[in-house]
Amino acid sequence: MSIECKSDLIKVNNKVYPCTVSLAMDLVGGKWKVVMLYHLKDTGKRYSELGKDMPGITERTLSLQLKQLEEDGLISREVFGEKPPIKVIYSLTDFGRSFIPVLDAVLGWGNQIALQKGEFVNKPLKGI
Image (tube, rainbow, N blue to C red; front, side):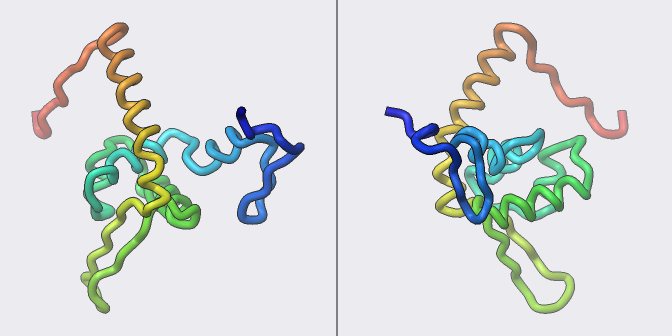
C-alpha cells in the first residue's frame, strides 16, 4: 500500500508538500543535486574536486546546491584546520546514503538510454 496520499498534505521540517514525490523532489530535484550525490557516493570530496567532476556547473550553483544538500541533511561538511588554508570535505550522511539505491537505478537507466539512443564519446583533452 502506498502512503503518498494518506492525508491531504505532508509536513516535514515546517514545509508542507502535496505528496511524497513532491517532498523527495524538493530534496534532490534540479539539474545538479543528484549528480553531486552520485559523485559523493563512494568517497568524500573537496569543493574543487566536485567542480572538476561536473564540468558546466557554475561556482554559485555548486555552492548553493551544496548548502541546500547540507541543510536537508543529505551531505555533511567537515572542516579541517582553523586558519587558511582550511580543508573542507563533503560526504554523504547516513540519510544521504539511503539514496544510493536510487542513484544506482538512475545510473543504470541513464546507461541504458545512452546505449540504446546515444553513444559514449571521449572528453576532449585540455589544450587541444
